[in-house]
Length: 189
Ligand code: SF4
Image (cartoon, rainbow, N blue to C red):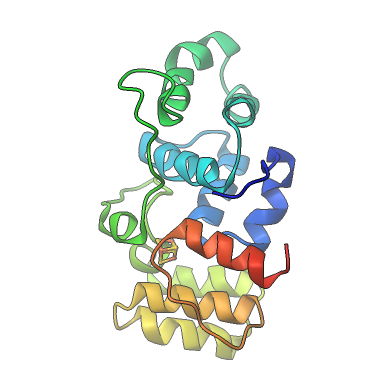
């Protein structure tokens, strides 16, 4: 974990610069839909905890989005418990660990879901469009896709990191939170 807390006001910017695709897509899904299913809440909720978002800020983040679609009582009744739970403040009091790539890649996804590893679950046409919309050149998209088509999702993710950070080294990606840390270091934060 980072030493300094990450304010939720910086998540929009960080999602563009320092989050891997799996987390950026969850973030965008929440901002657009004001809702996200349970597995996505677990995947993204534990990730933001891991990068240094406090429990109070997490509650505020989810509440502000979800109450665009439901009243505050329903949010409190149906969703707050899980957020406390993820931070080890309810139930078994286990301080849950953010998910690794191995777990995220293994997770099954269905229609309307935003969790999972996009390099695996997206069809290749949609993934190419997404990568272009994130500013990758046609040749950079092809480079990333050459790993995707062979099932090398984590290497594709490392290539995406290298391209988007203009980095000479391609990091080995095993965990979204390491991706984030590596990004912050590369950017000098
Ligand atoms: Fe996320 Fe790992 Fe997939 Fe990259 S390889 S998008 S960090 S699950």
